[in-house]
Image (cartoon, rainbow, N blue to C red):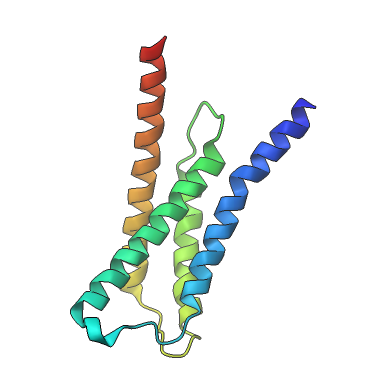
Length: 134
């Protein structure tokens, strides 16, 4: 029974990763995703959205890869998030009104780094809090 419970927990950790990846893919598939009325702010909001999307994705990967482990796995969550960012831009190349942009990959990577720091900050903070509570 313990093994079954562990399998459900593992699946529960990966479902958000899959759903969020689908969310990113969905938004990347929308043609001509610009709001001309906003002008410069449209550009700013889209870049913030890129960072946020990939910060959340990296956070979810870190959560899934590092659940219940004594040593943290830094490489795979960041690597897979980065590969997803590259593939996302490649995918946008085929969407009408969209294009692949190396700068977007770099902005996505900044989001990945931010999500990684956020995950580690929360894990460190929660571990520290638990030690104090003893």
